[in-house]
Amino acid sequence: MAASKSCLITPSILACDLANLQDEVDSVEKCADWLQVDVMDGHFVPNISFGALVIQHLKTKLPLDIHLMVENPEDRLEEFLALKVHNITFHAEVTDAEARQALIAAIHEGEATAGIALNPTTPLEAIDDVVRDVDLVLIMSVEPGFGGQEFLHDVLAKVQKFRKRFPALMIQMDGGITAETAKCCREAGANNLVAGSAIFGAKDRKKAIASLRKA
Image (cartoon, rainbow, N blue to C red; front, side, top):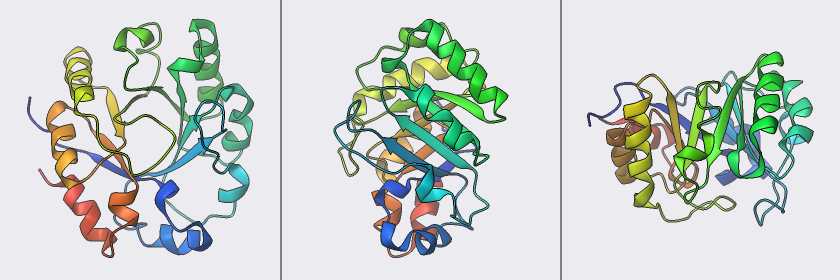
C-alpha cells in the first residue's frame, strides 16, 4: 500500500518538560500540525496526568487533540469543550454502543471532532457500530498509559485493513513513533502520527518532525 500523501504530525505534551510547558509548545508551534493532550485517570491506565486546568492558559494556534484515557469520558467532556479544543478521542474499551453514540453527539454539539481509540489487542470490529460516525480512529501501537514504549508492529495490519475499508478516514497512530516506525505507519495508511519522546527528546524539534513526515 502506498504511503499517505498527507500525514499530520501531532506532538504529545506528555513527553515534554511540563515545568516549561509554554516554551516546549513554542518549540513545535511552527512545524507541527496538532498538539495532543493525554488525559489519564489512574484507573483505565496506571498513570495520572493533567486536565484542562494545565492547558487553559496555554498559548498556541495548534489544534488541540484531547486523548481521554479515562474510565468515564463523559465526565471530562465539558472541561475541554469549554476550551474550544479541536478533537476529543475516547476509548472503545470503556464504552458500549449507547455510550459511544451519546459521546459522539455531545462532542459534535460542542463543536469539536470526535475520535475513538483502540488498544493494541482490541479488534477493529469492536467499533463497527460507530466507525462511520466518528471523524478519527486512533489505533494505539503501545499499551496506553506511559510514554517511551516499544512500537508494536502487529497493529500495522489493523491500519492496512481499516484503510482499505475506509479510504477517506483519518487514522491516527500513537505509541513508539520514531522516524523508522513512522515510515511503516504511513505505508500502512496512517495519516496522523502522535509522537512524544521522538519530538520533545530531540534538540532540533523542527528536524525531528520533518523526519516523521518524510516520504
